[in-house]
Length: 497
Image (tube, rainbow, N blue to C red; front, side, top):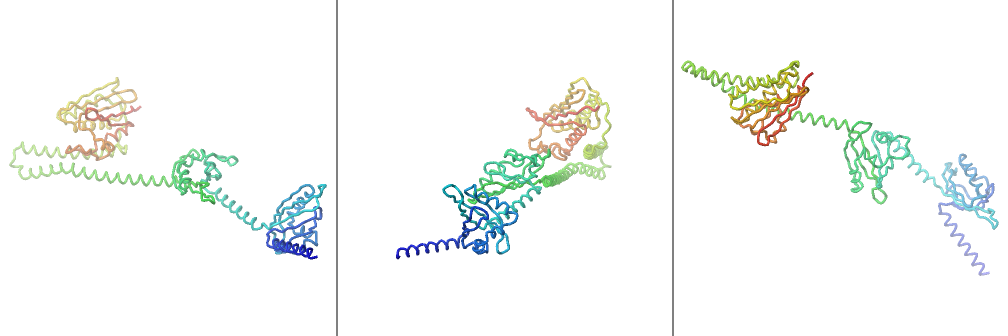
């Protein structure tokens, strides 16, 4: 009797422990018949905590449990229960109306026990409330859908790149930029993405784990644009970069505005430089002839009556020469304006290039007083070609004048003319002081003079007139330095039809 009493006590203790475990367990344990109406034989007391109903309600009424299943889920649940005849294990999720009048999501699993002949004799199952988990999953799904909707509606290019260089996501705008159809299920490859985003900043984000901003050009819909791209690391729970999210925006208009501002700034700087050079030129070049005119007039007024006719004539000639120099400088300024605006260009006409060259050479020799030998060479059978004579005379005259001005007396200057049916070439060779390398960039700029001109007079407009005249005639000009010293200016001009 004592031994039986001890066994009974151990059973009571075991049952008590089991009940305590079931009371705190989130899972409700039950057993049921494997045939309709699926009567509950046992259900743990914690069912009250999970559903709000007592165990007796489930056990006493075979239809109680079924009546609380959501009407939309009831067919699926009954279909699963009917499989207990065939299967050994069943699992399902459904909505269950709890005592709080709210539908809760339950996850249920049933193990079917069979007899020696394999016939089902009982179902042992459990269910847990997964409402919070389902709500959390639904919130995540809604959040993902929201962000996906925002990404798809965005006018930014949004791309998710994995460490393995695969594309995990690309939004519609980026697909469109790549010419990737909406109905293509396969995502673009990493090499496709590199048409929009440079590879080096992507790898930099993986290596440094820091966000990077970059700007680059790309071709979208056969149009070159500028993209400003933020590359942001996406971390795993172990703080490792798993993905790089690229968000690129079209900044073409912004870049164009910046470039326009840069051009405007450069133009303003060039204008200021032009003003400075003009003031410097007028200060040096205008001051001397004006001073000469004023001093000669003053001397003539004071001593003219006592001077000999020869001395008076000498001062009058000085005044004339200074006035001519001023007139030539003003003419140069007006000529630059005329050619730059393309205003005043005479209609093209047949011009005898040989005669024009001889006339200009004669004028230069007279002004130079034959201090420099001038050599003229012509190749080609044609000499009568259609062009604009005034601009052509400006080109030849200014190039020869400069060659003479910047060459030492006695050094030879050569004019070379080559004619063809559609083009002609003018080359002027000298053995003068040349052009320092650092001055060549500004060689044709108005009022610009090289650092090696020293006291040689000039306005810095001669080569500007040449350049503008060549361009007005549709030609081109470039400068070459001679190996033995001196300069060569080469002009190529098309013949007008």
